[in-house]
Length: 65
Image (cartoon, rainbow, N blue to C red; front, side):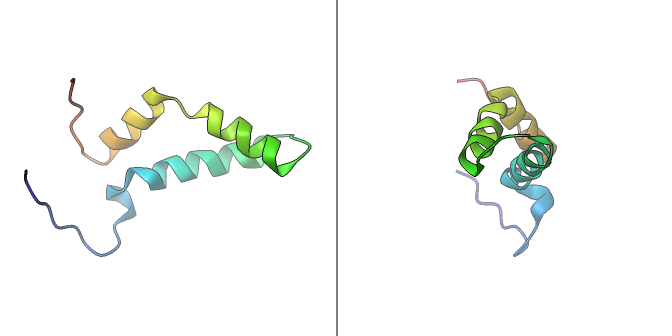
């Protein structure tokens, strides 16, 4: 295990920030009738390939397991 210390707040190194940004963009474009419908549509739009890209954008290596 290799411990890596990061600055206190570094959104460019945090994959969830990329996911939240994508979800927010989708929420702005959705024409859902209720909040829950909009959230559900956005949640379902994030695929495992998107998640892998967010980690790669942060500099994390993709491993096969």
